[in-house]
Length: 182
Image (cartoon, rainbow, N blue to C red; front, side, top):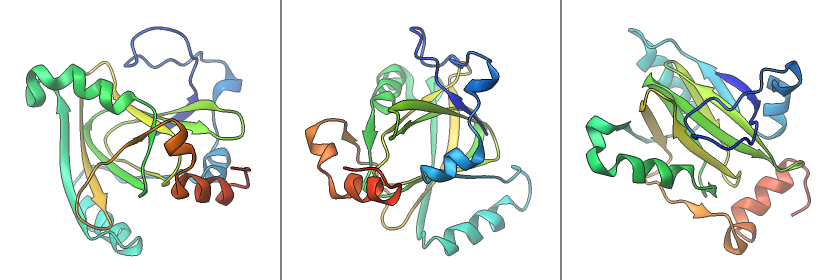
């Protein structure tokens, strides 16, 4: 995974949006401060055992595999990508292990409101905390396949940014956990 500040330039969301200046890189400590965690577990024989260990440690009971591609979603592909790219929070942490393809998770740095772009590729495992504003898009390859892990039944319920999300108890708890006033 490669993390950097999103350049906020207009253009296709599937492009890297990276200005390549050294100051745009985001280090692991910055990600830790906003409670974003990541690992790299090569996609090869044996990755399932490592994924099982992390799921057990974090009390994940369920999982599924999602494939975002034109081939898989047909005419719904462009609309689905727009839905995932709309800024939102979840009431559960979001954990994804990339099996193939790639994409970008953008997370808001609460203290600055800047977007941090997390470029993910096969083998990347990402944990996005409950309550953090984020969004997702595939990259120019237009395909991402990921294992999604869940504490309970598989679900994906977005709360889009607005008054409701700002007042959400999970959002408020997240801000407290990173020492930002709600």
